Length: 387
Image (cartoon, rainbow, N blue to C red; front, side, top):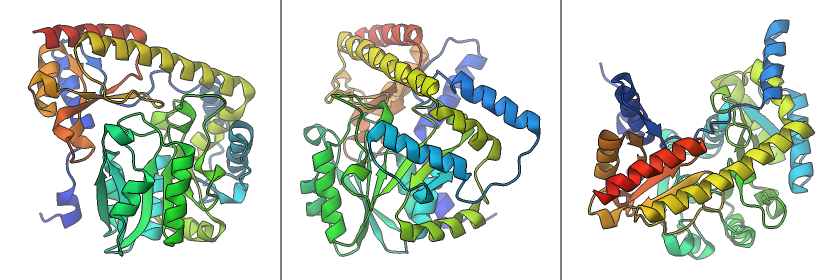
């Protein structure tokens, strides 16, 4: 059987691969601490779970419009007004089957064969695959601790070329948890806009940013023509519900609608009905409490890694990831993760998932698990590095 070149070219997703290895150890009766997957342990808020049960009980679950149920689109627009002080037209909100579908639609709408998309190294690996699937090329710009593992206006201008058609930035970022300052984001977007290029901003972790003071600001505060990607998975803890959204310029709405109609018809109807409960005051207050809990967990992790003699070149300022330099152990990232899992049952993700530059010296830890698991996992890591 012959498979497509694009299918054969896709590299393994090591975060998932180490998850499978962890499951195999559990099946052998081993105790495993999973710090490899970015999946909040809180789960969906209770009101959302109840709303899902009610939606299913009614047995009235037809297709919605391809752009999503208008009530949910209006609720998302209202969230930007109340949470970020930004007016968003509900007609520009597109509900999608997870943020992955939003990125899929974006690349399907914008990328032609040979077009280049600029993004930082390290960055979320699936973003690269979306671009390549539609024949585009990824200009993966090396970053480091000096730029908080993020693109900046200097790097963007230095790596721009005649084929660049879009700039893609995630802030805060997976795998580093670092964010781009709003003024720097403004400069990068303004540069790309002058070049008549698209600005694709992944804000999946925006509402899990540090607040100092007030909530983090969306890119829409400085660039109302940017394409914004977001999700119910992280701030609202709805990972398996596969529901996300995007905000796009007016001119792009009919294009996205046609693509969504043909690629997946519409997002899940019961998930959309349940997601309406995300935007009540009580649910938003609960999600803020959870964000504060993640800050406590971050302090636990940074303290525990320091005791293990492991370096974190840049402390995260959002999300729930820490990017750890393991080079002083004398081991590669892959060997470190393999041996740590085999000997201690702690699962991390090697940096090889996220780019090329120095990828073999970094590993990602997700602290989206309980404090009890974090204390136990860090104790095992400390014993491992001591040995």
